[in-house]
Length: 316
Image 1 (cartoon, helix red, strand yellow):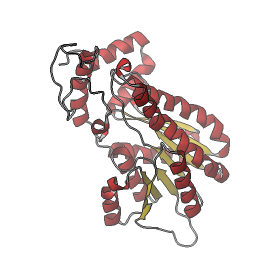
Image 2 (cartoon, helix red, strand yellow; image 1 turned 90 degrees about the vertical axis):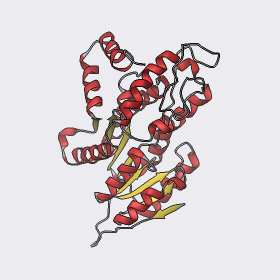
Image 3 (cartoon, helix red, strand yellow; image 1 turned 120 degrees about the horizontal axis):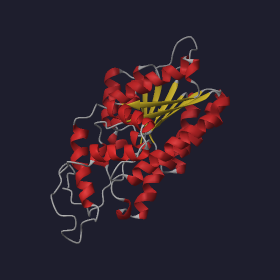
């Protein structure tokens, strides 16, 4: 099922470049879809649930943007293949793919059910692979294309309370680096976007085990001892300390438009500057730039202690 806002075909046979963005209903995907459309791309804004696409549809209609809203579940082989095949049949090309769809699984490794861990990988890793595999043939035949993977500063360094989520971003980093060698000969370039804390709906969408001593709105922490009843985790103290940092940081974080702007700039860099090469890594936000720099400069023990001090000490 699709909703077309504006076809925006160019005159005199010039063909509008085509972009596909996953996870476009909110946050980074939402802003990136709008930004690409505003910059001349016919944009397929894909969403898992069309009921959540009302706001992007409203803005696109208001601004007369070339956006088509398409239902696609990155966890489902048939959904991805059907949607990508439909896009190619309609436009004959895909120039930009933004793999943005994902969510956060929160909690200590020991506390997480294996089914939740598998589900996290299904979306954050296999979803990226699934969409990329379906888009690569058309980009390869064009001998042109850019795949943009939305990673995180968590893809460069471990973060307390997010061991599984962080591991999916580490996987995405390695996948992207290796893929760049495979596709370079076909003119395809890979961009890794590594945001720090961004003020999106990420917190509201976190999957959190019930055993943690956290209010239902997940914006406040119920004070309690480490094991004051049988429902609490042995890791509750660490969780509480991290959340006392994370929630205020999220509420004061930059708007996701900052990420969309960086994506447009990165596309320009790899499209027009030969010295950039086939692979580009872009940390976004002052925190991402700070920690990515320190990760390169400090010994592992020094970096570990730095993060512990910044994220856990003097909390709660």
